[in-house]
Image (tube, rainbow, N blue to C red; front, side, top):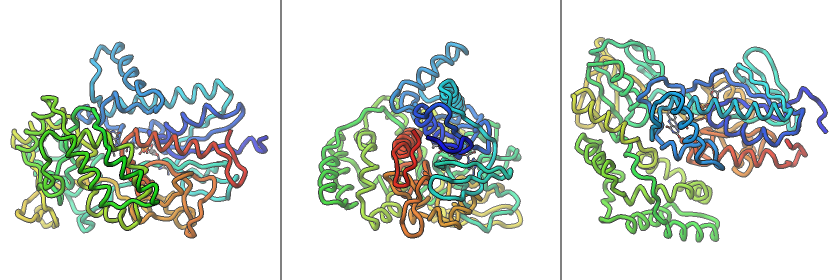
Amino acid sequence: MRKDPDTAVVVQIGRGPTGTALARQLLPGLPAGSRYVVIDRDPAATHLAFGTPEPTHLLNTRAAKSALNLGDPEELQRWLTEQSSATGEPVAEFPSRAAFGRYLRDVFDQAVKQAAAAGVVVDLLQDEAVGITGGPGDWQVRCASGQSYRAERVAICVGMLAQTDPFPELVGRPGYFGDPWRLPELPADARVAVLGTRLTAIDVGLTLAARGHTGPVLLASRSGRLPRLRGPETTAPVPHVDRCLRAAADAGTLRLEDFGRALMADIEAASAEPPDWSQVRDCGPTTRAMLAAELAEVEAGTERGWQQVVNGASPLLLPAWQLLAEADRAEFFAEWLTPLLVHGAPIPPETARRVLDAMDAGRLRVLGGLYHVVADDTGFELFAEDHVRRADVVINATGAGTDEAALRTEPLLAALLDAGLLTAHPLGGVRIDVSTFEPLDGAGTPVRGIHVVGDLNRGAVLVTNDVIALSFQAALAATAMRAKNEAGVHIS
Ligand SMILES: Cc1cc2nc3c(=O)[nH]c(=O)nc-3n(C[C@H](O)[C@H](O)[C@H](O)COP(=O)(O)OP(=O)(O)OC[C@H]3O[C@@H](n4cnc5c(N)ncnc54)[C@H](O)[C@@H]3O)c2cc1C
């Protein structure tokens, strides 16, 4: 029996894809009269990924593979088809991220409507959570407005952190922009250097192209590698990886070297030609010729063994990560994270075609080996291993930070770190108990009744950068939240 009608069963902070997936899992199980509070500082949830109005910013996963509903993979495709019959526009294989943002809002609104019909009170609040106090069973979430909300449980779904500046001495220099999502108008002929060569950097290049920017745009990073292209969604069997994980589960630990060998054996078995392993880590910056060749391959529908194995093995990454020893996880982050992101977060062929067009028009180039950027009186100098390049404008598009300094840029997370309710994970984000998604305090004890879901769990679960992985996390967290815990608090 609930004691205090003002105490919410859950206060959820954040209603991006993760918060939406969590709410739609939890709301249907709540008894009539329960209160569920959702706090988001952006009422329309026009957050980074899916708030972009730019039509060339596409979902990098196919619509058929991106439904925010593990039990109904066709949901997004159906939603797009309904929209298409209303607007007359064809259903895109890779829809715009703005369209996905609208789908997200519809899904959330629908979940709230159904909960309201079942007598659950859902409060949607525009506010910024800045602190959490109290203890198991009676948490208080404090907001910037001065309001406070009591809850049996708190779900922290605050998404990716702000970017960190790779060259902090550039911050505040005229012509340096640390936020790639809020670009001011730039002189159309400015020489622009974008720091980063992955998804965010490509977004910046596409935004500038859409604005009719005529000056040269340079995407620059240490690796100089653009993401690979998303080919067919077919999967290859991964018997070596399966065997390796079974043996590791029996032994209670997995060696990175064994996992790597098993993955290579499966890729070799799935490939028509013996793979060139030197290409995985050390192939150098992506050239126009490399991009054109891969685009031709994907447009021809060629099956690529490595991608089929990545598709087949990706559901196994979470259990594999849990079995890896701490030192091997650190080695993975140091040595293999870039190859994983390059191969595991590929771009749609249409995006690659736009990049190639910009390269062919002489408007876009890629630079590898970047190690330093210096500001002077007339602009910036970029130092790479073999080149020095000049730019009038530098835009940081290196992606979200995950270390403790990045956590502390968020007032809520800084307060929770100071209060000892969160501790930084050495590989990024915060430490959690992976069976309940509860954060670990300084003594390694789970903080009962607080749950962290999303990119903050990067160090703990590795894959947190796509909506399917986030839905999966939300489903696991919801299961844990429904279960009665040691403090005897339960939500349904
Ligand atoms: C540019 C970009 C493109 C991406 N493209 C894709 C893609 O194509 N396909 C894919 O599968 N994945 C993509 N991702 C990865 C991932 O799916 C997204 O980052 C996704 O938005 C993460 O969802 P989230 O709900 O965890 O975080 P977010 O979407 O960031 O939502 C977090 C919410 O929490 C709110 N919030 C944060 N702090 C507070 C606070 N203190 N108080 C109140 N509210 C708060 C924010 O306002 C926000 O609405 C992309 C990521 C980025 C950055």
